[in-house]
View 1: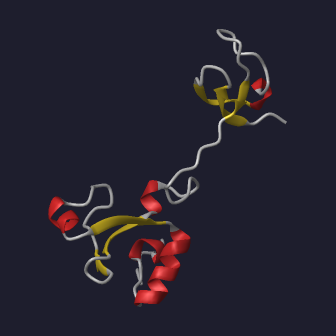
View 2: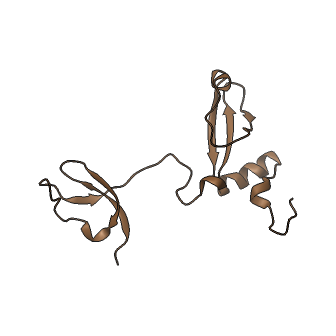
View 3: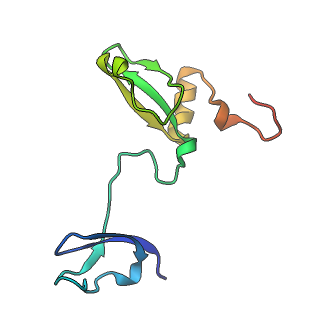
Length: 119
């Protein structure tokens, strides 16, 4: 059964995103290379985790593991915090559950119920 994958040419290195897997090992039309599966390793949390489901915190190793909670998760670490050694950490649902237990916290968005009652 054919699935959508990313492919790369073995000769010129051209990458095509989301093509059918039936093109694997076929000839690249414009050069002598052949199409191979393109494997990427990402530093992101999980490709199956949507951006809105990620929780972002700033952690400083210089200050003994202090944590800052940003107002928004889609902005970079401010310069004043970067100077103090803070780094951005993204957590998916699995990491967030263990973080909640470790720090005795509750993420409102993760535990919000549709009936209108929060935690």
